[in-house]
Amino acid sequence: MNLASAAAAIPYLEIVPAELWIACWSLCSNPELQSVSMVCKLFRSICLPLLLRDQSLDVAASGSVAYGDWEQRGRQLQQLADRLDRLVEYAPSVRSWKVNIGLAGREGESHPDIQSWHFFDEMYERVLTTFPTTLVLYTLASLMLLEDLILRNCDISPFHGDSRWPPPESLRTLNLHGVGPIFRSIILGFGTGNLVQLVDLSLKELHDFPIFLGFLKRCPQLESLKITALTRTSFLSLNSADPDSVSPEWIPLLRRIAAPSVAFIRMLTPNRPVSDVTVLGPQSESPVYLSAEELMLFLMDIASTSAPLQTLVLPGADPTLACLIFITKRFPYLRELSMVIQETGEPPVERRRVAADRLAWIHDGDDSSLHLSEPFPLFRRNKLPDITSASNIHNILRWVFGGDISLSPQLEVLRLKADVDVREAFSERQHRQIAAAVLSNAN
Image (cartoon, rainbow, N blue to C red; front, top):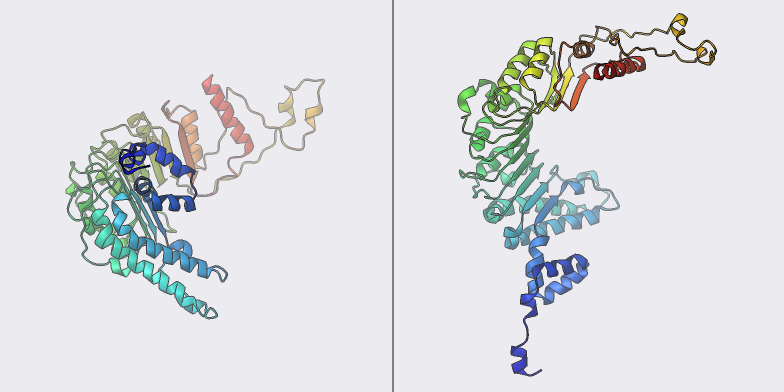
């Protein structure tokens, strides 16, 4: 081919659709991808952003090191640190960043028989230093297309400080679990701009309540909020906070909220389209239950949402008939109702056998069923189940079957759980009686 024909050659690399290149990429092995990327710049420019979309930094996976694999784990940590160093150039391609640092600390002292253990410790320290340096100084400043940021167990000293970076305008998910004292630094690190695309916020622990409220103000599109636990300081700040400290204009699109504090939920639900409310169980061995009065006040507050409530989950309560009637009347579109019912004590176990004269309905010529190893359960569809009154759950079932409570046709899940073991009270016979009553009411 002469120079003239070469100059007039068809530019295949420019006219081949990107979809075809991506299809070729999906069929190649990693060595083949590396080889093709070295000779084809177009292939590299198309596929490299796809390879960099999801970043995962799981240092915790290297925390439990056995004698036989410590060298391999050390090399993995070295690769993680190298990848962080090189990621700066390609940061704009990252969409999702998941980080799990784990517990920082040296383990060489616990393995004195391994002479080269210092290599693992050095690589661990390098990752702990490289990650916050990259994240604070470079990455978030250029991750303007970041959609998901998940930080777990990132209590590392280089993160402490007054770092500031522009908030990613495309950030949709922010998940902070186990960040400890650096919670304030991370939240303040986003500066003062609004996170206009953030829709999902999840915190394992809320460490600084005033700082958190200021952060909520900057999340106008937030739809889902979950806080697993409150620190003692945040709990005290919440109890002393003015209910009007949260403006009605904040988080106007909130739909789902889950928190271990009733006061926190009551503060954020009014006049917002909240459809799912979950009161998480407290992270302690001594759970606190809502009394009937506290439950009624809570129900009245969440009844002021601007959207029909569809899910209500309560960790522990002592519901009265009035409370349950209020729930069924005020929340007619409720699809799921879940409660842990407070019981005053163990209900007595009812053990009775069927009398012989009650088997008279069996045909006279067939006495094969008269010699049973187990009591024969007898129930009638036109009679309500005979349930003991010693259990609050039994009382609720009696109210339902007796017509005192009219469950909504929209209800799909009704979950009642006792705080004590009442399995003996619900014998197989009673389950069959309840099923018979349901069938009778349905007919």
